[in-house]
Image (cartoon, rainbow, N blue to C red; front, side, top):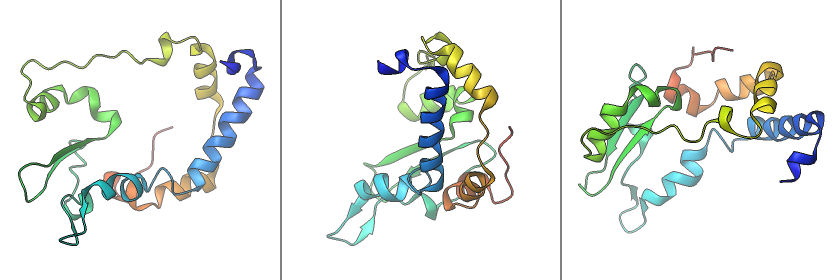
Length: 151
């Protein structure tokens, strides 16, 4: 709530500071290895039941289903920018007929919409940030080494 009392410049400075830290660390690009993968490691057999990097990601479709050797674990990973095009596939994965996505968390409908729009128009990550992200294992896996994010 204190953001509502800050000036736009204060908010922008704080967001840029946090983005710089996140973009230059491995926190975002190593999310799978650090946070997610640990849930699928079983020390008694010294292996991972799901290791996404052992299966190619379908870059054209923007999604991939991963299954463990045991039938109880199945995971769907979707690139966010492909989400709205994959309703049918999501419904199939979940076993829900006539599945429809609901867009409820839209910045354009929030109290900060003007700030968000202004920030999007003016923010430019540094070349160092972009290089760090583009050269990560994460980007290479989901997009390929020659991909550049459209600005």
